[in-house]
Length: 236
Image 1 (spheres, helix red, strand yellow):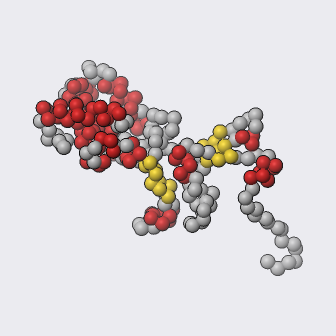
Image 2: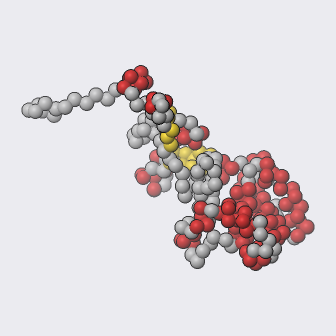
């Protein structure tokens, strides 16, 4: 595989043509846009610590498409022209994917790059993360989709920037028809069946009933937790 900055023009053109269809078919325009951003040196800012807080962080795709649609842009001219930017970006994106996911484009799946983990506070010290964390799970979406799972452009591609953990759809005509999901689980007790059972459902976009009326709750109840007040004078 040609590596970044080492390909001769004929080799690079063949490399681009070989992988162009694969990039489009398997949904890797995100990798292309990321590399194009690097080629144009867009959004890097005066310092790496400020990059995640720039306007570019939330508008990377829109910004890059606008620049690529304008060959007269100073960004394009400064990077050697539109053809050079597109050719280099496609070649580098294909090489980047091949290094990480293997040479077969059929294996270039977004979920292998874009994964989510539910971290636990006690998992800061390894290897406790292997015990307390849940995941990783392949995750769809990105910064520009309804399934909002944004990543920081300078640190692709795990959705660490933004993801709505709690989802809810309320049926105002029938409140018992309301559904919701709140990963990773309802229990904070490691080993409990409900410690992490909601995260796989959340990843798939599934929901659970959020019952409102007493009869609906009674019908769906599995366990009961009964609290009795302590009578004055009794020993605890």
